[in-house]
Length: 171
Image (cartoon, rainbow, N blue to C red; front, side, top):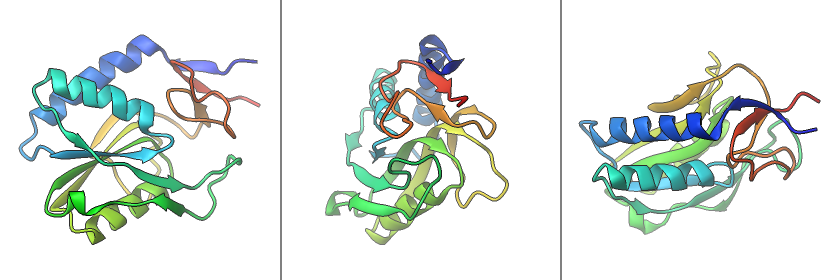
C-alpha cells in the first residue's frame, strides 16, 4: 500500500522556492551547500536550482552520514564521507530531509565546524519540532508531527525514496 500523502509535489516545490527566496535574502548567505546523504539529496538538488534562480548559485560539497540503516529507529551515526578542505573559512548550509531527534544534524554541524567552516546554517524539508532535539534548523520547509515519513529522498529501509511527494507510513 502506498504511503498517505502529507505534502504533494506541488506543495513541496512551492515551499522550496519560498525557502530559496528566504535564504537568498538573508544577511549571511551561505557560499556552499552541503547535503546530508542520502536523505537530503533530493531536497538539496531542488534547493540548489531554486537558489540559482534567485541569483544565489552556490558550490556543493557532500557529507554522508548514516543513522537509520534498514530500521525506523535511529542507531549510532556513522560517517561514510565527511567534509573536505573545500569548506575551510566558508559559510556552509547543511541540507537534510528531516530533523527528528537532531542527532544527524548535530553530528554534521560538529564535523563541519571542526573542518574550519566560518559558519554553519541548517535547512531541512521537514522538522518534527521535538523539544528535546539536539539541533535546530535555520530554514524549514514544513513542520510535522512524529510521523514516519518517506518520499522526496527519505525512505523506509530503502523503499519509497523516489516518490515525488512526502508521505506518511502507517504500517
